[in-house]
Image (cartoon, rainbow, N blue to C red):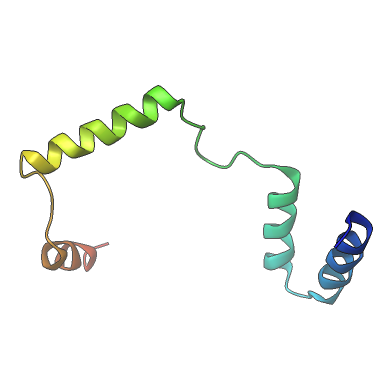
Length: 74
């Protein structure tokens, strides 16, 4: 599918949407909103993964049952 065909299909799909929340979500996506989080650098990403692995080794995690009980209070 070429760009023109894809643009036409997108326009047609958007024209059929009457839900304002869906349209706002699409608009946010298309305008390239950063959202509430800043992108991580590769170093930050690796650091977070290393930290998480260490927490698991240290036993600092919740079982599925514990997480389900905790989520009941959210």
